[in-house]
Image 1 (tube, helix red, strand yellow):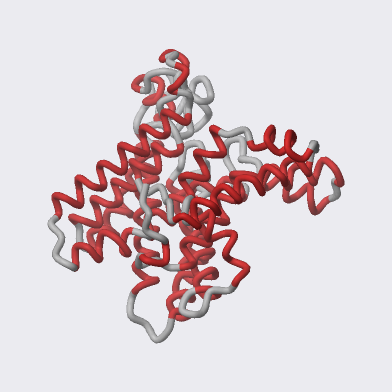
Image 2 (cartoon, one colour):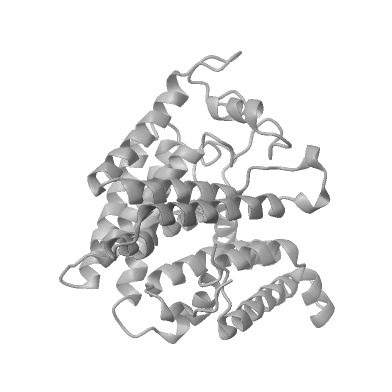
Length: 361
């Protein structure tokens, strides 16, 4: 836990605002939209609610972007932290140890999030969202520390192509090579053999072992985007336009790749990683175009409060029953209960923000 306020560090408003928007969807925004659809219905709300559910297997919906966007933004912070410390003369060993500590803490928090306090090892799920963020960010951090920028680009391409090759050509016992159906593919088979405890979907886990590789590429592509944000250019808007154009190109390439390797969040296929990096770059460019390099507009403050303490928001949403508390305080249910729960979460995060308490891992 750090008592240093966000504005006291070298930060970009766009990163915290977009991170806050991303987390807002998780801690209540999606649930509110789904409830609105139940209450009023209609094609517009129905379409929004549909996009706020994960695609079952192949395909893509907006909700599938939430996790990769957060990881992409974590990678985008690397040029603001590790690279600047290296430029200031920091030794590599302390940077590696610091990154490793952060990764291990996130892995442990992920296991705790999945129910480690129940002490039932057979039912405990060891793979987690926080664990994948920690390990993928650590992989990207190592690349930033030890590789040149050209070397990092080569590694991104190598990971994406190599993962595709493994899914297509490495035979899975009993199923052969290239079978991407649930439970039959290489990614799921490795989890079945190596992951202890419970798999999230019975015979597979969307946050399993092999999928960490393309997730590292996602974080590394985020690092490339973060580097664009702080590079010397005629204006911050020019940098933002570069991110938007790069995002559009990446989405186009991913759509073509989808014909040969389906976009699939559960497997975090290479085409999925590229698609999400494209959308993330596009969103970051738009947010930076509006917000960076100028006085911060007042309307972004609620998102800054969430984005500056995003890991805390994620954990609080898991361990505190805000819906029950809102029901007890406001004697309300349904939509108003969800809105009240979101407001209570924001107020708690705001109090932490006011006191300068931020979870830094």
